[in-house]
Each structure stands twice: as C-alpha cells, then as structure tokens.
Length: 213
Image 1 (tube, rainbow, N blue to C red):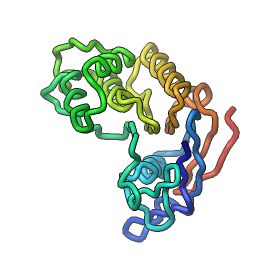
Image 2 (image 1 turned 30 degrees about the horizontal axis):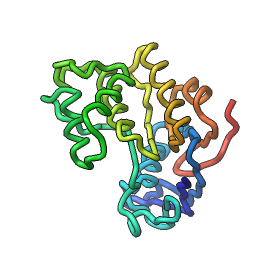
Image 3 (image 1 turned 180 degrees about the horizontal axis):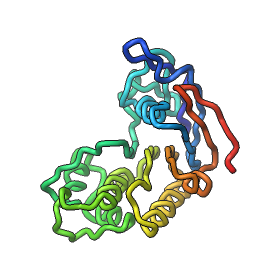
Image 4 (image 1 turned 180 degrees about the vertical axis):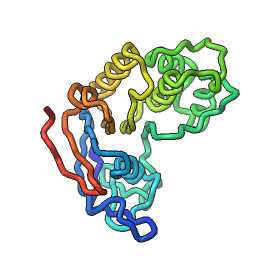
C-alpha cells in the first residue's frame, strides 16, 4: 500500500497553508509529524485523507487519485479535533451507529475496539459524562474498529493518564504490525521517539524530513 502526495499546495483566502509537499508513505510504517500549532499538520492530514481538496497537485492511494477516482481514502481511521460523537449516547451506542454506516463490522468487533483502548463496552454512562481521557480513548476506538488500511492520529495521547498513554502506544505498534499505514502528529516527544519509523517537520506549510532520535 502506497499513499502519495505529489506537489500538493493548499491556499485559503490567499494564504498558503501547505506548500509544494511531496511524500511517499508505505503500509507497515509509522510516520511522525511534528511542528508548532498552526504549522499545517492537521491541514496535511485533511488533504492526505481526501477530506480537504488541495489547490494544486494530487494525492493518490495505490494509484487511485483522491477526489477524482475515489472521494476519500477508501479504508481510513482518523482522529482529528472535534470528533463528532453523540453526547446522549453511550460509547457502545456511538460506535454501533458509526459501524452501521459502512456495515463492515459487528458488535464483537466494536467491543474488541473498546477493550483495546481501555473502555468498558457495557458502561452505561453517556458520552457527555465521559472524562477528557475517556473521550480520547473512544475517538481512537472509532478510528481502529474497522481495521483500516490507513490510520491518521492527531495528538492521540492528549488527555490520557500514564496508563492510557502506554495502552495507546502499544495499540499503535499493534496496528503497524498488522500492516496499517499510520500517520502520527504529536507534541509528545516520547510518542515520536518510541513510535515513529520516519519523522517529518512542518513549518509554515513547508515539510522537511528529519532523523528519528
């Protein structure tokens, strides 16, 4: 599996958000992305997923061009800011609703995903009563429950306690072992050091590759 960005540029209201970015990303790897807030990391994930159109250049997955041959990545799990989950439903109910949209998995798969992120499938608390850490775990559960080919995680360990951080790091390594292509943006240097096979820095929409230290 190969996800390619070919000289992609994104401009919004005359401002360049992403500037002439080219990448070749292969399955079975974790790609780390670092940069200050507003540097373009989240916009890059939106462009690479197909959730955002680019101004020029193209993004392709195994030769299929996004927003031309396919609308978005056909097998994608993603965690960005503002995950849209229903506040008055339980974690299980939220994931059941999302699973019905594509019909790829059943209740056992959903329970497995919840357990993998450290949540109790039978917990009757609604999402609005979840702590920040529980909300983050549920967001990650929805991203991995369908065993997607590509997983994009923007600050996945935010709001987690130490046990939660260790659990999610282990989950990311397991997904890499499964063959998933994982894109990881994190301000946590330990996340990058322990997980990333390749490292990119984004500054003002310009990307450069760095050594993983």
